[in-house]
Length: 145
Length: 113
Image (cartoon, rainbow over all chains, first blue to last red; front, side, top):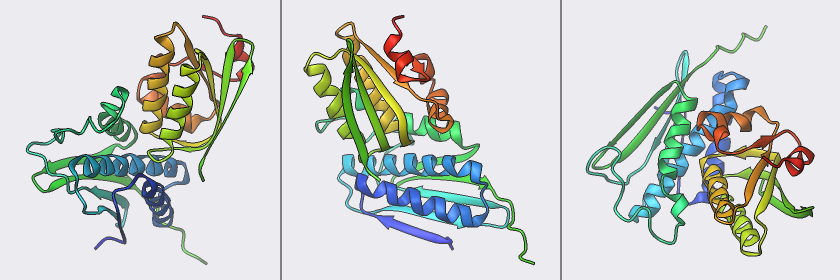
């Protein structure tokens, strides 16, 4: 079971909340302070992408974020429920709806940032949606003496 | 934390001072500001990012969009940033080759190349 699980309506204003919660749980799990900025950015990118996919596809389901603390690692899973026929396929009309041309490819830019930041990342997608799983090593908290 | 924006004119440059977090929620405000400046005839922009606490790919997209707009008018868009965590995002996306990044507003305003 996830240490902390978060579900939020696919709206841009909630992405910040997901970043703050993820960073707080990562800190408690023992992710190094220097890496927390990366955690914050990576989870924000993953949630931004999920929000975009939900909005473009008219998906009303919430975006799901699972924060998982294991013995020596901390993982974040960001799941969307936007169906695609093949991994990486764009939802039809995703680039439309009043977005400016430069908004095209932001999706890919988000993934580029994630893969540039996180060494251990898995991106999967299927008929029922997609999942980004990112993992960081943790250093165990010193025992209180 | 929200986004704060203020603009001032220095010679033929318009300095946009940005503070707070630029993300998927706040980036549209920055986009509107840049579009408005270009529509009003300001084609040489200096975006001061020293007060920015957080920047994501949505924000990068808006800056790239601003650059495209000013370039259409033979203009320029320069960034001022000394924060390592913000600079890192420009580096991993290769955008350090796209934007001139300066260490101070004075340096950005004086730059001509």
